[in-house]
Image (tube, rainbow, N blue to C red):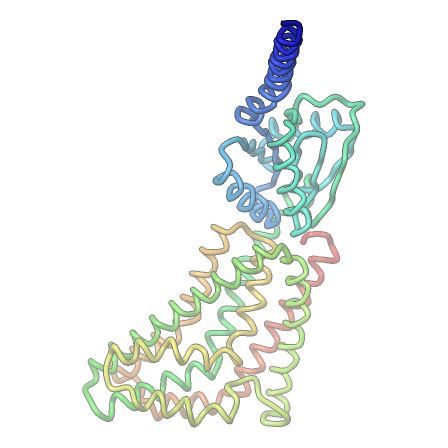
Length: 395
């Protein structure tokens, strides 16, 4: 009887202990679980319209937010919005920082200035930490709290006028580079061979449509290549580094074209490599239809890259550093329209009988060195101008 009482007391104590443990567990962990489920992470990004680093940062943050409904992104444009600029100053003062440069991102007690791959990784870590532990809205921060600041590639916060100047200069640069590409003798030579081949075997109308189809395919292929390279530069966060590289590249391309004007054929030429030309001619001479001309344009565009990609890559480096994505796409459309205009002009001139393929080829050969001179001067000046823009702090 006595042992039964002892067993009952032990069971009762164990039961009470179990209930107490369960109660403590529920009281301890349930608020954390609820907080984790209902926790909203408020992130503030201050950016400037036309700032390429800002565009890259916004794309990244929006992609993260798509996969996380708890992340709330507050976007503040400060170049042209005075109210947002005042808020930016208030938050930086509250954090005890004198931060210059956009994008500037606030999350909990941390500040990220600029954007780069390392900052992207740090932001992902902070967002995950806030999901697990909870974070305060940066707007509520007070001045005396500890602030952690990380700095990456950024653009000035106080120069919307510089942004306007850069945009004004970017448009003429795009037009001039497109003209250099448009007068490139490589594209002329390919089109003339194509027109000659089709005119031998068929009528002028089919030659007209073939020439236009070829020009359209060149436009599409170069535009898509431009969008792809521009996106790649933006995604890597290396737009400023790439800008410096292409500025130097532009100077070399300009000098090489001047070399072709002074000593054409010596060492190398800024055209399709001589070893490629027989294969290229064989491909083009096999075209006898409009769809064939359209299809061959995509393939020929690869052969043309060695002699036409220089100005294009320079401009892509400029756009990646100095413009937003939307504006860059519009400028790429403009660039490629200018690029194919001479092709369309030659096609129409041959169709309407103003010239022949033989005369067009003779004109191309006679003006070959002059075309290299014009291209060399423009691209050289463009490269020097890009480096000056860096020196003056405009980029």
